Image 1: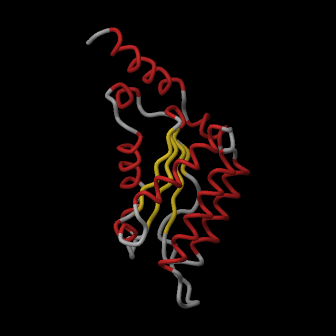
Image 2 (image 1 turned 120 degrees about the vertical axis):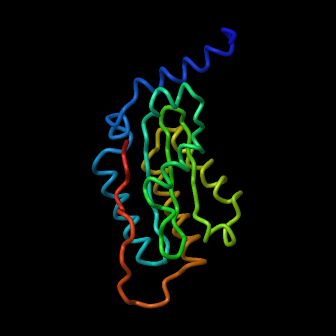
Length: 174
């Protein structure tokens, strides 16, 4: 491997090595996490979907060195957090990887026929732009509002009967 190819890998591994859960907590302090939890709860009362937020400071160094892409990690978290295992297959994961300044939105298979992948990518790009301006909570609030709108459009609750909450509503900070 040439030095030119080695330097970007080394820089990425170094960024991931120095970031941890404390950095996620700084990016999304407890009060902000509580407000986002409330937004998720209110949203899920209006539709049949389940929404998870995951803010991860950095990958394990071996994963960063090995070239694990943010999308790949988001898919892993989608499985680990059980977003794929909702009754109607309409779970959505909003994943943020701070070390790479990356945002991924993963929608379950029940949503694929109702919302094109390009729409999720556009939403993720808007969230990335908010993060670039240092507006983590505002960006997540905007993203949650849009995800809520998309879920209500295709999967609105039709009855008032209580529906079990299938997944925790609080953001996951890693």
